[in-house]
Length: 344
Image (cartoon, rainbow, N blue to C red; front, side):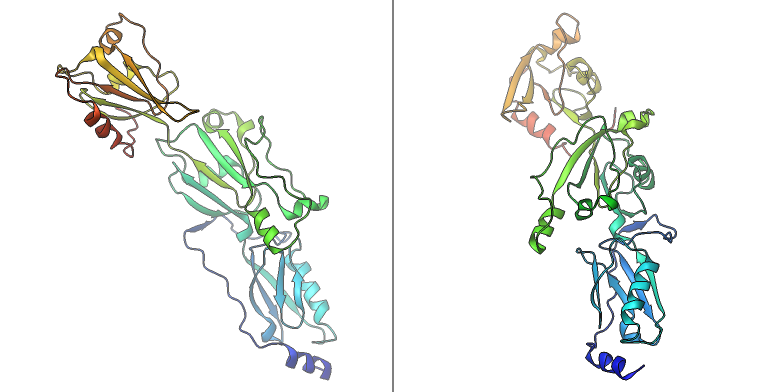
């Protein structure tokens, strides 16, 4: 090491190398990182500089796409391969800090390519997957759907990414028949400062995908996911039956469900039921106020009156013929809200 390099070494602050943060509960679906993998914010890399242990160690790529190294300061790592970054570091050190430096860069964690899945899935959690996996691939890696899954997957993905400003770095996004249902506030053309960058990263757009169609082979719904996407698979919607029925509880809702089917799923009415005074409680989707619909369940069950179509989250109450209040029946059935019954 020459005098100039020695002087630079003395100027370099003495700090322990950064270590990668463990991410509990994260499943890795990456066997090996490809040689042409482009480093992204959040990734953890290991830098080895021969004859300069003070420059070696683990570093996490910041949200700005940079890393910091003693002597060299802030270095742009985003969008480079490990070999390209190693060459850049070697060139920066050459002649001024080291003679003919040998630098090796290894990608240790691909945190930028993390995908999250939750809800009615067998193994919910965070998954590290290289590239842009399809929705079906992520569901499969997460152990598949549970029996009480709903018909729609809700996908939250970042509405704006800084690299989208550069046309050469744009990735094709997933395509769907329908446009995203909602979007965050319009993003500026370029981020301008740390607070603004944080705001951009927190803006998401929401997309809904019919997973029943996906599993029927309609692969046009099998969109590719962007890194850091969040996939939520809600449980199936339900309706409730309570009061003077033999098996009160919550039942999976399917389009076209009727009052007759609901009472049948609850194993029929008791002899003490006031079948002519049945009540259906339904929430208005606009006002959120609860409406009451009074129906003659006895005539419907006997086919003497037209059946009533139910909607998700309806509460069907069959009162007692002795005139008892329906309040207890309502409270009883609502207490089963978290006990989703796949079928009876």
